[in-house]
Length: 223
Image 1 (tube, rainbow, N blue to C red):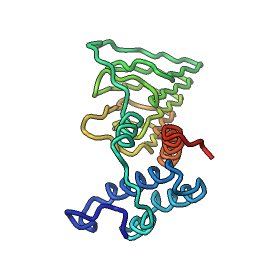
Image 2: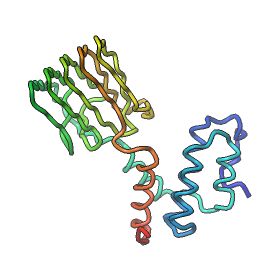
Image 3: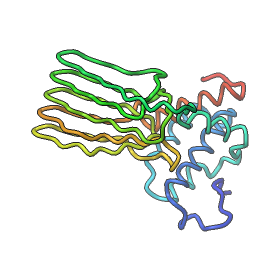
Image 4: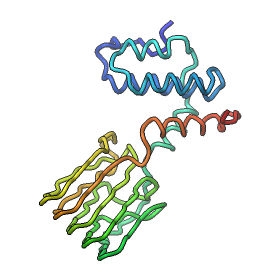
């Protein structure tokens, strides 16, 4: 019996990423209840993450009948939603880094605008646990022979409008957030410098950590 919901629109006409997410949710649900082993879960998660066809997704969960319930969905929403805090803080933050390094990480409060001046410096902004007050954040960059690294969770959208002069910009963060997700816009210039935007964790690492979190929630240990 096919475990993926086949009611309504036929599976071939549904968005592929939506069906992939449905398959991954079923894998996590069954693993977190001890239906499949950790080895089987990791193997099947690899298949679901790399799948290129609907049939691969159907096959990977075909023998799993346990469906994600309300408790699972609520836990997933808490784990994968960005942290928001109500407030009207419109402050800007200036980061000046000359022959030095500067790092923001942990649960820091993200301002509406961040201005970065880096001269032979190194700046890292880690948004994976950051607390957002605004849906739209602008990072204005003046980078001279420096490096800027931006780490984001998958539910935050990033747009880069950088101008490079013998420099490089590498945006490896997929825009997976919905319309309510924070959007970070990076603009400015980089001269003989580099800008790297990437996920703090890969999608697979994120789902594996969430699966083990669910096992604990349902009274099972990690192994």
